[in-house]
Structure formats: structure tokens, C-alpha cells
Length: 324
Length: 137
Image (cartoon, rainbow over all chains, first blue to last red; front, top):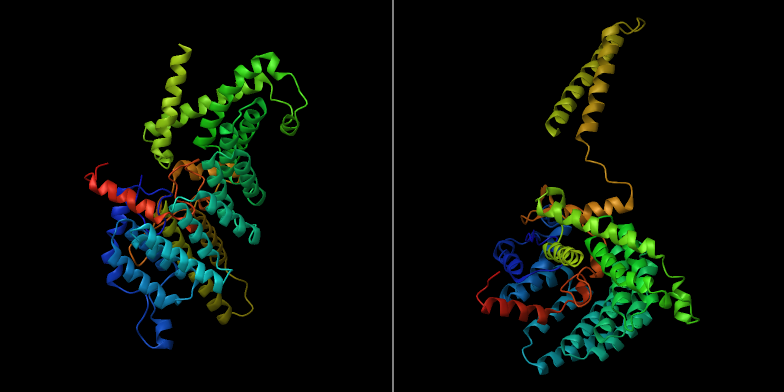
């Protein structure tokens, strides 16, 4: 299902797809979308559409990935002549180009200094601020990247992409409560984002020390994510894992006893054992349906991620063996 | 279905035009006589046929419930709808509106949703390794 489309590339691009994307470069570079006629006529006979520039941008990124730097340079020049060298987006794309061409850490450091210089002139350039964070990450300095991101978010607290990135960085460091805070910020603006609910649930599930309250919060967020998306494989998968962990904890009566831990208070009363068992059954049956429909090659189910379906099948198989 | 709809639309439009023209001619020749029955019937039939054609050619409705709508997006993925740009790229159907958060890959996943933070060097290295290993899988 990894269809190579430059207008809407898939959310994760494996190398073969990247190759077929960048192989479209000669075709797209052969004809310019802008008209060479003088001003009033160029408006009438222009071939450009909003889509052409999305395609150019995605082509630039995929040719940089495959090492086709000549084509990348040509596309970058085209974007620069069309939108001007001072355009925020073009500045960031030029930065990506320079980052890709830097071979040693010293050269990358130079690109980083270039970003600092741009930001001294225009501190509001968000695209360059984000590139700066990406370079810090690439240099292996996650602590500095986190500091840079917190500065960015102080000035632009509704930038959800940055909140999500910060959550990811914190999670990579094992700072679970900070990561959870970041995802909660995302949910404040996008309460309907099923992927954010599932991510938050995953963070609760992974957070250490794992306790009854974190697991029941995880269960609740997974439930919310499937309430928002009735075929969300990740939601059902997580729901099954979380409820499998919760069932023994809840059956053991000593751990259910309420203590006055403030964290437990925040999580509310733990779910009932019968409810969790029902949820586990629901998740199992839904996962089985997804695996079956995908395996049968049903056209209405072809959009699912193959790796995810394989993982779900493995989980169901493991579960079946345990019961036998 | 699309062909049937287009045929109904064409037929309906022809009859509607004919009926309107006939009405005009009739009132121009006999200003005070009532409209003959056949013109009235033609007008009504043409409007019915045209309405049926418009309903048949309209795109299918989206699910109203949020969970069903998002579930449909998830199950079916993005697929082409028979439209291409000048560059030869197919215009795809609606995709996940929250893809820009880049949370699909999970924690430490390979998702590239957050384009502002795109790790060009990491991806370049990944591709180079793939190419060196013979470009399999």
C-alpha cells in the first residue's frame, strides 16, 4: 500500500518508496510551472497550481534523502525565484539542504551558527527555530534540544507540532510525567485527536513505576481513542495490553484498597473488574475482526498498516496459546 | 451509476429546455389562452428526471458520526479519485487530519509527520545503508 505519491506522501517513507519518489525528479524538473512571459500575460498563461509547490517541496525532501543533491539544488533555486530568498519556508528548506550536505559535525555546527544568525535578525522565524531543534537532536544533544523547544513554546504556546515533539523528546529521556504534560497540552487544543489520546495512553502505560492508577488512566485514554475512531488498531491493541495488566491487579484485593496517595485521588476510583474484562473481550474481538478482514484482502480495509496488523495477529496468537 | 446519472441529466435538460421554449412560443402566439396540458406534463417530467440525475451523480455522503468517519479513514486509507495534477500526481482522498502531530508511529517510531523537525541526516543515512546493502525489501 506504500504508493509513491508526491502530493500526499505516506506518514513514514521506507527507502524503496523514497527511491521511487525521487525518480520523478527529471520529469518534474523538465517543465517549469511558472510562466516566462512578462507580467500581465504570465498571470493568464501560468501553469502553476497550489499543488505544484507541495509537489516541489516533497520532491526536494525525497531527493535529499536519496542523495540526489543536483536535483535538490535545482528545485531549491526554483522555489527561491518563485517565493524570494527571505521567505520563511524557503529559508528553512535551504537550511535542510545545507544540513544534508554537511558531512562532518564541524560543518553541521556551521549550519547551526547560520541559524543563530538568522534568529538574531528575526527572532520570530518559527520554521528556523524548529530546524535549530532538529540540528541539536541530530548532533546528539537532546538536553539542549529540550531547552530550545521550551523557549519556542514559551513564545508560541499553541504550536502543537512542537508540543508533540517535546513530548517525544521527554519520553526518549524516560521523563514520563513531563511527556504526559506535553501531550495533555496537545489535547487541550485538539480534544478530538485520536492519535494524541492513544499516545497519552501509551505514555501512562510505559511510565514507571507502573501502578494501578497509571494503568487505569492508560485504559481510560485508550478507550477514548477508540471512541473517537472505531477502527483504530493501535487503540484496541493498547486496550488489550492495558486490561491484561489490570485484571490480575484488580483481582488481587489488597492492591485495590484505597490509600491517600494524591496521585490516586487524581486518577479517580479504579475501574471495576467486570468492566475491564468486558473491555478486554471487546478489544480481542475487534482485533480479530481487523486481522480477518485485512487478511481476506477486503478492499475497504486496505488502508491499514501491514506491520500493525502483523503485530495484532502476533498478540492474538500469543493470547490464544496462553489460554489453551 | 455515473453513466446512468449523466444520461438522466442530459435527457432531463433537453426536455426542460424544450418545455421552456414551447411555453415561450405558446404565450407569444396566444397571449390569453391557458397553457396546454402536454407542455405542463413535459415540464414536470423533465424536472423529475433532472432531479433523479443530480442525486445519482452526487458524491457519496460522508458518515455523520465522528467515530465512523474517522474509522472509515483509518480502514480505507487514502485512495485516488481519478483526478491528476499537471505534474502527473494523483489527487488522493481525505487523510488523517492529525497526521501533522506525527504521533502515529508511537514512541520512538519512524513516523515523519512533524515535517518542521524532519531529521534529514538520519533519513539520508538510513537510505544510504539500504542502498549499500543491495536495496532489498
